[in-house]
Amino acid sequence: MASSPSTKSNFAPIKTRRAFEVICEQIREQLAAGTLKAGDKLPAERELAVEFQVSRSALREALRSLEVAGIIRNVKGAKGGAFVQTAEPDRIVQAMQDYVHLGDISLGELTEARLALQNIIVRLACARATETDLTELEAIAERTRQETSVEARYACAVEYYAVLARATKNRIFGIFVDSLSAILHEFVRGPDYETLQQSLIESRFKLVRHLRARDEEAAVAEMRKHLERVHRHVRKNSKAAASG
Image (cartoon, rainbow, N blue to C red; front, side, top):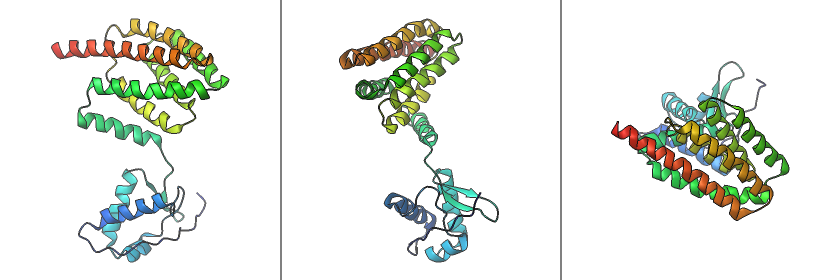
């Protein structure tokens, strides 16, 4: 990796019992202000410890915390150091999954969130989707039809929703959709899912036709019907598992 000059910083000295938390807070504040950007190299540990007026151990604890959070990456070697990370949506997806596991999110909440989110996505895609987007959605639906395993078909469904979100031209929606797809995967089980997938595939083709016709209300109605069908299936299997 090419040598990169350290970014000039303006950190304030710290006098606190939990110095590493304040270090993290200041670095996050400089990221928010744009003083630090993806790819920037932080000053060396010795320089940072002097500037913050903290021990090297407190500084290292802060850097470890920021690395775990995905904010920086530590590169070893003569040209290494602590570098500000580029954004990684996968970390957000994992964080949302962890939140669901820890917070005991209900199936009803998950469905409600998907209905609201997809309503917005479909409306935006109806206005913004290009022919390339629509052709790709059709190709994924057709590939889903050719797949034979449940897992392969689910992977195609995840890809379909990702492309649909991308058609909005707003990357934030893609992050939310990926997170909800990952969470839903844990719920979508059961002996009837393979049969259910047949109707879901047809629904995806219908949605593309509505999008191509720029028929917003028909597209929204098709997506709602699609998601409610999935919800009924998952709720049925959840009840069966609970009573089993």
